[in-house]
Image (cartoon, rainbow, N blue to C red):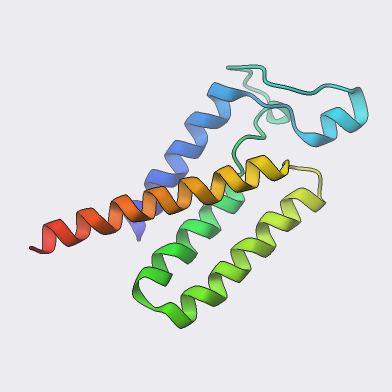
Length: 118
C-alpha cells in the first residue's frame, strides 16, 4: 500500500507541473482556461487532483485486501472527488484522471507483490 501511495503521489506531482492546467476558479475569476505547461504556480496545477488520487489509492489498495472496508473507502474517495469539484479546485476530468491513476498504480503494485511472493 505504501508503494502504491508513493508512486501515485509522485506521478500526480509530475503531471501537475508538466500539464499546468488552470484551476476552475481561474476561469470563473479571470476567464483563464487551458494548459500552461511548466507553470509553477498553484493556480495552474489542477490536473490531476492530488487529494482524490491519495484517497482513491488508499481505498483501492485496501479494497484489494478487504472488500467490505474497501467499498466504504471507495465511497469516501468519491466524496473527496466531488468536494474538490464543488470547491472549484478541480474539473471533472481532473478527478476522473486521478481515479484512473490510482487504479493503474494499485494494479501494478498488486501484480508486483504477487510476483515477489512467488
